[in-house]
Amino acid sequence: MKKCLPVLLVIIMLILLSGCLGGQTYSDVPSMEKKIAKELDAEQVSAFDVQDIGVYRFVGYTFDSQYSFAVFKQNDKGDYTFDYVKKPENLVPRAENIGVGYHSIYWIAVSSNESLDTIKFEIDAQSDFNDKIITLEITENPSISVIELPDENYQGEYNFYDGQGNLIK
Image (cartoon, rainbow, N blue to C red; front, side):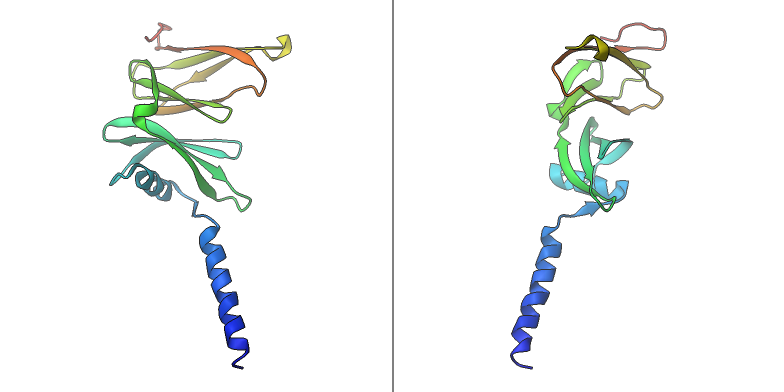
């Protein structure tokens, strides 16, 4: 029995250690908000919109009256692990109260502009067959919009429009 006890303790310690190293998962928005706040060293953040695309969950959040996004990646069990947080000051401002960022092959726009109605992204890929115009209708304010970009070389141009079709600058 005394010989088995050290082996048993080692096995238990390995199981506990593997559980700790396996990575924290986040299955709901409140747990994701807590993780984002921790990454920003903030007391609290508030999620305002969530977009699921492929294995990624893009979470638009507000912190200290500023807007940005975080990314979580779905694992084999269907839970999400933390992947990336974009700090508000690192968004690229593109129009009034609209900022953009990138993650992997995704273009992300975060907006608190009440006039934003439509985003049009024209993609000119290296092949005539892949050229396309992606139009996103914005129904919420604030909002997060995500577009998957081509894996290949491309040129693209995006614009933001209000409800009357006027360009927002």
